[in-house]
Length: 185
Image (cartoon, rainbow, N blue to C red; front, side):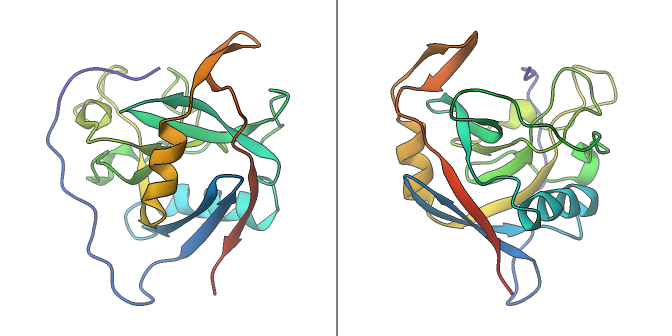
């Protein structure tokens, strides 16, 4: 699912009070506050906000945890049933933002334009996930936000014991459930 070629990209934009939308992801492991980069990733941000406002994420889990790499969630329930989504969105990996520790990006399959509701949070600087070109193995994953509070929660989730379950690898043994995602005013 992820590529391995390294790349250099710009860092996340500097935040200014009230300049970016903010969401709080409440989980069974604690709360994570995320600043969204609407200017750099307008399609991804609007997509995420729409799912959040619709209550879609309530009851989904972080279904993929790879220590030192990523935690991924937003698409499966605790019994690993995939939730139905809206159609895929444009891949905004060309926005110049880098998959650094604490950034949030759209998850997708090997198909470049397949991102829907799932997202991941980088546990490390994962430059191999950045856009380096237009070939399928170079296109990258679109960063659309960053954790501003709760990185300790992200790290705790990232250290969760995992096993293969329901044909999926890296599923936390104890489910980490997203109880709700709130868009801050």
